[in-house]
Image 1 (tube, rainbow, N blue to C red):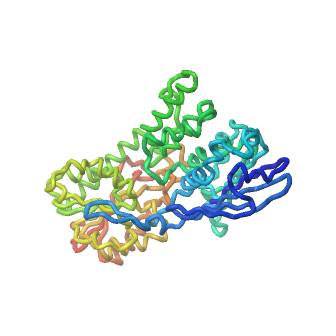
Image 2: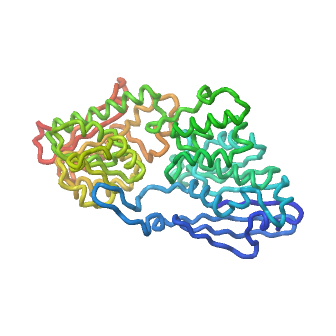
Image 3: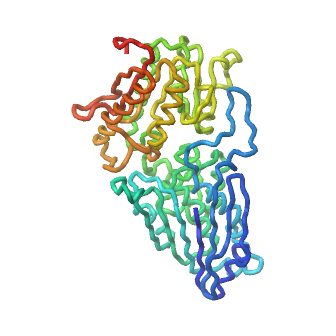
Length: 480
């Protein structure tokens, strides 16, 4: 990502004093996620531009972090996109930290002054219900007095039917103090991405209130901003909003304000329907595992452990494993199943480890059954052959159960557009014919038989909201 800040006015080169960065000497700061470069592409008497270039190195994200023993979590370079907007906020706070505080020994009067400033963010990740939602930048920045320009492009010019990219270039202009501009950007750019790269704790509330002081408590979208800032973690959202309300002259409680509902899984599904569908899906998978007689099960892409909680209660499963590419999800899964409270004997039955379904891993082997529940749609389609090779070719359990959304059913959800998915992280969603074509080709290639089931209440025309494929190896056709 690239951030540029332009000051237009008399002695514009003094921007270097405010940022504590010499305009005539490019600088590089190294962090554990890569490098941050600061340079000045434009220096004139009445106009000066400073640039901060974020250069993320995926190897640096894991380099030098020791692994741990069996059953624990270890550093892993995964195949998922990194949260560049969150890294950008971190870079701003560390590289321009003095400027954000409003201190400037040599030009304090200028630091305290309202200036003609503009800022441009290039390749800002944006996760909306609809790609290219131009209303959101105005909702966020216009109440702060900025003029807003927002451009995006096609995801791929060779395939215009794919729609617009989820990346955009954002420019804001206004008369504002530099410290305020930096604080606005620090807080607000993760709001567009709706994600963070690090573990969120109580200290994050203090950070938000410190950088939001003087403007966030009066912002008409403060509930939405706060919710997105905490990546929809309601505990911290409620705590921050209560403190903001107390700051804001004791205004009405935050718990009574409306929020934009975006459930963490299948965001477009109404909450009561989503919960019922999740339960139905997990129970359907559990039923298939019991029916096939599996004794050992690995949940591949286990997330926060919803299926693991059900498996642990079933005594006929003698060995259970959960694996996911996300270390934070695995930590939550461990908490959810109460792993720390298990006896040593119980811990021998349960294994949690970090890995990718698209990379060979000997720990995937020797299980009777594998489950891949609502996972494949989070991968780019060109990664699916690698997944099939790893799961069906290398690990090759006797039974594999795969579930994924049925795209044809999306017409039943009023807030899903023709070019939208149920969740912002979905890379694709298949209808029944597409899913069966993929599953059939995988079964034929790796020596499985496959049958299909629907999960959830079907409608007469579009089928069920979730579709499931049950792959069996060395099973007679009348059994499958």
